[in-house]
Image (cartoon, rainbow, N blue to C red):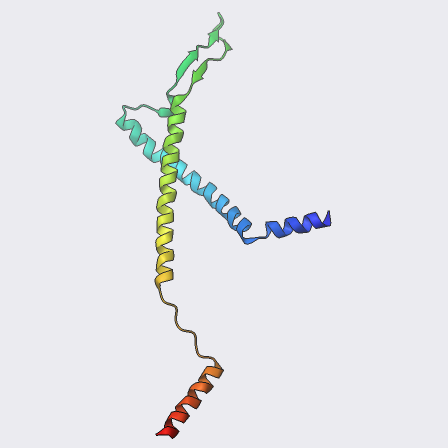
Length: 142
């Protein structure tokens, strides 16, 4: 059992696993933001353009609900909810586009960092001493 726990600890503490966990958490938060963008901003505009049609309400009734004489539902209706499917496709496309644009911005920043030349390292004490010796030898040659 001790070997198992130590192996698991080694696995869990690897950089990739921690990076992945952070990515999942940020992705979940990002997903909520994009879902709000879709549901609260984009879909009302789409609904307005399509004559107040709400995609999530679009369905085809395969079997109507059975109602008794008192008006109570005995058996629920069976519906083919294709509107929800369309809504999920729209959500996916917008999330994919959002991630694509976010990654493009991140890659541009990374590329700028890589292109910027790093300052040369300061010479070590040994290099300074060798430079002084070289300069002295040059003076003596003249």
